[in-house]
Image 1 (cartoon, rainbow, N blue to C red):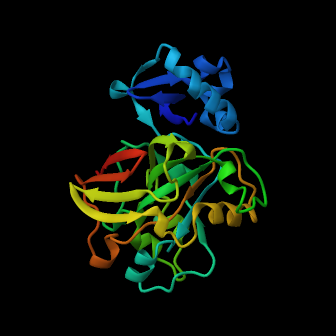
Image 2: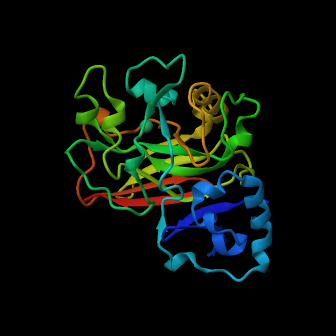
Length: 278
Ligand code: ZN
């Protein structure tokens, strides 16, 4: 049975309907309060998820403090120009190999966290985020989904001035300001989707739709990204891959995020993040 994993006030929890279940309590295993420990054993997470309908919930989601499902991954990779529509608006040729950069893990924030704007050129990039389960090196395309614990929503918020301050651009720094990597609200195991490779993704700013796409449009799909990255860098439980953004970012219209803006990022079957800018 599939599972939904969340971070409730700093503790890993499974989610069912409107309720959450503290993972340490239901597993009887203290280290599982930390999602990095739990995500290495997705088989056990599936088993526990099947048991929770018979268990008293730990609390209601509506009143819970929901934080980043993986607040401190060991590595956080990201992919540039992975949608034809975004490569086109950037007037760049679609890449022949995945264009990988890092979002330094200090940028990870929660699904409701405020985004502290540090310049006048912050931009939104709605992205599907892959969360690694069992880790590994040289993972094949065929085996890749078996190494994916789940999928979540992410914003690859980008400081365009900083990104293009150097030439070639330094993607890493420009996309790693503190709080510029919100993820959440939950991590959903792949088997809970009808087709985990074809999900609707949207970004609204103040209720106005700015980005709309489907993850099936990706140039390099999830399996190829996992295989490619793991051919270079050993993947560990909880590692994140931001898989790129469809078109509609603000950069090409010179329209950037302002204090007071509300960025709503949604992926079908996962949920919505709402991040206020200040
Ligand atoms: Zn991006």
